[in-house]
Length: 96
Image (cartoon, rainbow, N blue to C red; front, side):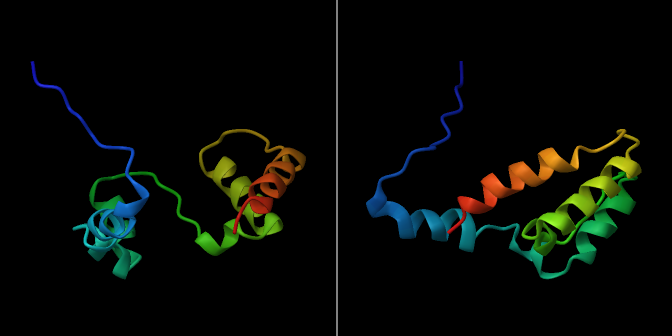
């Protein structure tokens, strides 16, 4: 039987090699040159994705607005703004 053995732990000495191999030289980088590629792929495959700007994640109020829009888009009900703000505060406090 074949077993997939995906490496998930790396030595600190291999940091540069791992970054180059899995981040810098990955074959998916061309996707990130143009945001329209995501939109086109979405339309081509009849997907119902909802896109937001990553910068909106940094500001709690913008994030809450976007989460509310996402909930409306997918008919998920009412959002809990207080919880989102509290979780954002925890997340943001742990960023470098």
